Length: 193
Image (cartoon, rainbow, N blue to C red; front, side):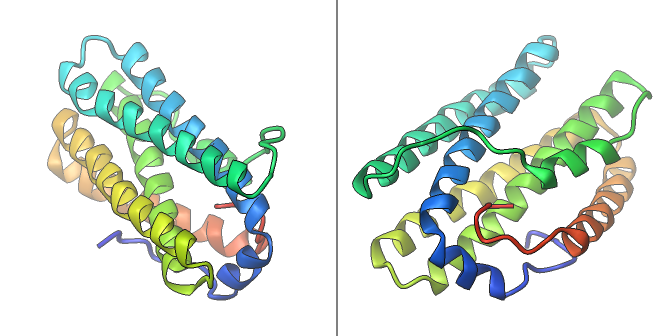
């Protein structure tokens, strides 16, 4: 369903489980950044009413997820700590096309957000199926379902503002770009991406 061309290395979940505190800290910042990204899109494109209508609830959900992850950290006696550099997101950003119409620029942002949500969803699915902590399995299952919905929101918004053929072609290009990035990133068990 997600269309990702390269699945996460199965070893990631084993490494992640051994570093679950670090995963939770990174996850908290991922949720904060997701909410901030949606707010940024709404502010940058105030004339796009459908964008605002779709993303306002996503902002609320992402912020609720941030609070949920903080609660998990608190349960484990872990501090949030400082934000970390997300090499995956930085590399996606570097691959975004510059220039073009306002709609094409918006499309690049929407495609990047869709990929981040899709990869998060895939990793949350792995955590929900593989880790031994039953409460975290349920936690990550719930978040996986939500992230899948967010991924669809971003793709649907791209279709709202760009021709269907353009979206189809550019999305396939983005999936290839993302697979290459994943293939070349170090396998780290202390990051969601």
